[in-house]
Image (cartoon, one colour):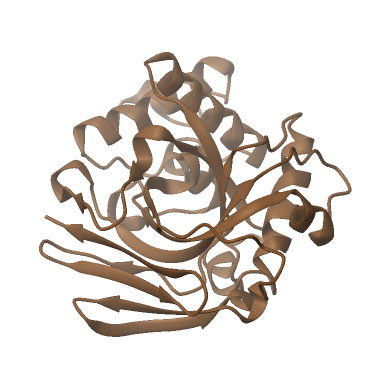
Length: 271
């Protein structure tokens, strides 16, 4: 390690925040993992990490990408314990992350991806915190859809803590939406079930209650958390509220499908 990069010699300045953002972007572009940023800057705070994320997203948008929604991560107690946190984290969904249903994803453009299934929300109204609750989310939701999310941290060997995950845009990589868009009015999201299959074999199953008891509660948390950063959820945005199942690694030739009892199915191939 270069001496000038040691955390005990360099405080977390604005220059450092920008440097970490560009380090993460370069790792993604090169498909080459980096050392955990906390090994360089162990005093990096949650606020610092979100500042890094904002620069990551802003840089990509400046280069021609488009922000189209948000994602919530670490909505299960197991993942929160792993990351040593007591609340979820969030990231931004970009147009470049979107993959059409039943299409292919090239593993040559990813580092060490894992997949999970979620109930995607499409907003019909703005959600501006603080004070947003589940009923507000349900009222603002235009439709829900089956979805798969592929996470791919740019840190080597999945050695991520909460600060790495936040700075790395919630380790967002790709997401896939199903074909059906259903109004939320007649759906019981906590009791909506999903079966996750890899190459035709079931690897996991769960209900919506696995996501903070109700996926809509995760969206409410997101709206209120964004308010702390003077941001909000916008009409037309897609929100992925967190995984119903554990996350699973994928490899060349794998086909992954999530079959929901009410939302239909969504699938993707890896080559």
